[in-house]
Image 1 (tube, rainbow, N blue to C red):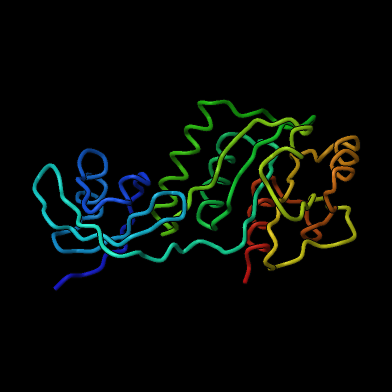
Image 2: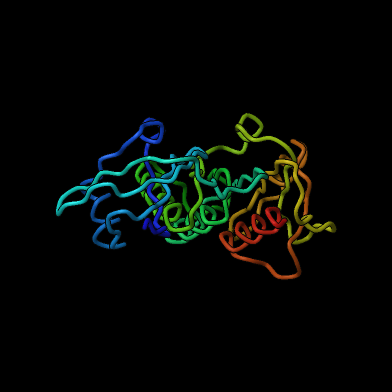
Length: 234
């Protein structure tokens, strides 16, 4: 009798479209050494773009396995698109942010430069963050990887591929960030020292609504994840 595993495996869209999949190397070690999958067990495979299918372990030896691809599986992704546009925090905090944003189902994390940001992100940092996102996606059971990009100048924001409402987190704002909803949304999260007056004026002029999360001043990564969770609440 076939049993179902909680394991998830990220593959390419081309691999997801096939009828079978050979698993070896790091993938094999993850599934059959760490997760201890056995023959005839089922797992989910996802392509990082929202596609998901069931797969069954059809053959297994000490170095590789063959998966038989089956019917479509649930994507387990939020219906609402939420983007985080964040003044880059320190690397270890950026890693935590990306991990938790992936688990929640955030659509994109865009890092921006600002006057008071600790540091920007570079290609090496983004590559590490993508690896963290992959591990988080396989753990949480989603099907879409968040888009990661940056560093962007504030002047680039109107040209970023986002849609819907823009919310600028500001602890001095009179309005609070609304929970739930269906409209796509992007949240602008400033650095530890906050946005400068000039940056707030620029972002508000570009159409961002100033909102607050509560009475406390939160760290960058805490504010970003709290805002995303609030917007994605059903």
